[in-house]
Image 1 (cartoon, rainbow, N blue to C red):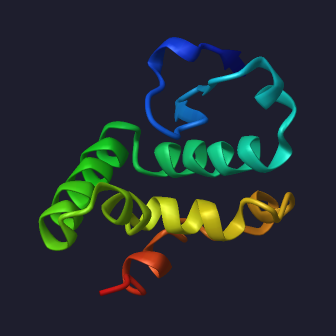
Image 2 (spheres, rainbow, N blue to C red):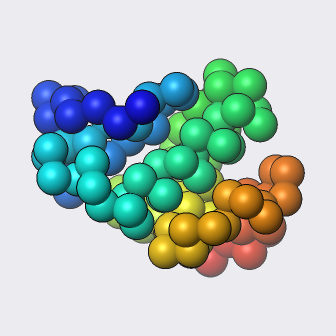
Length: 112
C-alpha cells in the first residue's frame, strides 16, 4: 500500500518502505513506477530478514560506512540494500526473478 505522508521526510528522500507500507513525500510520487519499484525491493528485503534484522543491518551498515567515509550521502549509497534497489529500480520485472537474499551480491561488491 502506497501512502502519501510528507511529514517523515527530510533532505532529498522521496520515499520510504516500512513493511507493509510505502510512504511517499508527494502525492504525484504514487505514480512513479521507478520509485515504487525501488521501495518494493526494500519491502522484499525486509520480508527476507524478518523486518527487524533488515533495519539492524541497514543502520549498522550506514554507521560503519559513515565512519569509513565521513560523508552521509556516500554512506547511504554504500548500503548493500540501497545498491541493490538503485541498480534494479528501473527493471520493473526484477522482483519476479530476484533470488532470495540477493542483496548479498552488493554487500560483497561494496565500493571502497
